Each structure stands twice: as C-alpha cells, then as structure tokens.
Image (cartoon, rainbow, N blue to C red):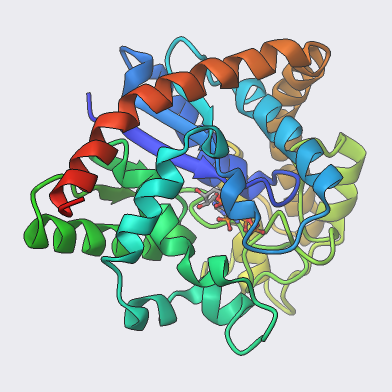
Length: 324
Ligand code: AQP
C-alpha cells in the first residue's frame, strides 16, 4: 500500500471542515492499511508557532486535537499518530529545504500573502513555513498526501522542492501526489460562505466545531447565510449562491439528501440532522477518551518514537547528499 501522510495544526478547536476534509479521510486510509507504517498522521504543533499563541490555550488545543484524532476512529494499530515537535528531524530537514527554496516561490504562498506580508511583526517562520511543511511530508516518503482543496499549493511547492533537490544533489525524496476528497473538499464558513470554515476564525458563528453540542449546531445552521430569491433546488453554483451551495455540500458530505427539499427551513433541518448524526458517535467516543488522557499521551508518544525511527534515514540521506 502507498504510504499516506498528513498533519493538522493545533491553532484552534477542530471544525466540521477539518473532519470532512481531513480526519475522515485519515480514518479511511488507516482502515485500508495493513500496518501502522502505511499511515502517518500528526499534530503540527511547530506550525502553530508561526503566529502568536496563548501557551495555555495551545496546550489545551493539542490535548483536545490528539483526543479527537482517536475519537474520529483512528486506530493506533493501523496508523502512526505523532507530534511534530517530538520528531526533531522535521526542523532539521526544514533548514536543508530552506537552502533549496527560492524567495520568489515563498512570496507567492497564499498563507503568507494573506496573513503576514507587509506586517513588520510577522514571524520569519510564517514566511519559511513551506520548507517545514515540505520536510513534514518528504521525511516520510509518502506517495500520496490526502488534503483538503485549500492545501494543494503546499503539496505543490513540496513537489517542486523535492524535484529540485533530487536533481541538484541525489534522488533522496519521493515526489508525492495530492489527493483531495470529492464531497466535503472545501467546507465554507456558514456566515461568510465565500471563505473556508477555519478553526482560527475570528468569530465562531459560522464555524461548526466537532465538539459543538446538537443545539449549538442547530443554532449555527439555522443562522447560516442563504442567498436571496433562490430555492435550494435551484442551480448548484458556488459563485452565484455560495450559502446554499455550501449547505448542500455539507448535507451530501454528511450522508444526507436534498431530494424533495424546497425551502431553506427544510434544508437547514436536514443539514442539522446530518451533521449531528456524524458528530454524535465522535463526541461519545471523545468523552470516553478524554477521561483517560494518559492513554492518549501514550499513543502519541509511541507514534512519535516510531516517527523518529522512520525519518532518521531520510534526514541522513538528505544531509549527506548536500555534502555535509
Ligand atoms: N473548511 C475546510 N474544508 C475542508 N477541509 C479543510 N481543512 C481545513 N479546513 C477545511 C483540512 O483540514 C486539515 C487541517 O489543516 P491545518 O491544520 O494545516 O489547517 P488549515 O488547513 O489552515 O485549517 P484551518 O481549520 O483553516 O486552520 P487555521 O484556521 O489555523 O488556518 C487540512 O488537511 C485541510 O485541508
């Protein structure tokens, strides 16, 4: 089986978008795996430091996110779950890849353009993070990287760096393919349906968190922005009707159907029911796991130890290839 690799940054409490675009895909890949070495899924806590964080909140978010990985159904016997900061090869290879990357390509990265360019207090790490992200991927030699649509640019720069490095020095890296899910590839904010649903969104009203109770989900969906003068069975076009398109996409991704629905009220009820049905088992499992934090810690400690083992030879090869 092709090795699969992906990370989630603990910059906020996980959202429905993180589940449909990432976690759920991780679980499917792990379920199809024959060994935990086929799937590496991590918490990219180093990436969280590219922007200022309240450290107590960061610690709590790391714990919650780690617990959610397991609650979503990731089985440590089928996937290696790790923390990026516990695997020093990530930072070491990142430097070697900074020596491979060009400022021109880093200047084009959307995240830097949107969050940091022109702001004097922007952290240098926000500019260089694509090199760390490339290291995150290339260290594991995955042939496939499952990510939401929004992350394609990151995997594309990783491919460029790997190809450049392999040509300039030695064929050390596997050049990975990007895989994006069809339904739920990009869940949009319920209040601003032209922007993706983000865990670090400034306001919570348009963001469904994985641990939101059913009544909170209902309220957020009920207040979701819809588009004027169009029934939900009208043309499915995100440029003209981003609000209703998003609701229809969420409904489909959560296993619901819009057949026979003709009003926004009915659509929102169906969306609520479908989302709650997806979240309920996850929340139940979360409550059990949260009662045993030592178990969650041990899973990630064991996974990080395995990640240190598998990344050591790739880092050694890259270091030697650069003449060091
Ligand atoms: N709205 C989304 N729809 C589909 N997939 C999504 N992902 C994130 N948001 C959506 C996927 O979740 C994984 C997490 O990636 P990340 O932690 O590196 O952060 P991100 O993509 O920047 O996610 P957020 O939630 O928007 O975080 P912040 O607010 O911190 O920037 C990825 O696989 C991503 O595709």
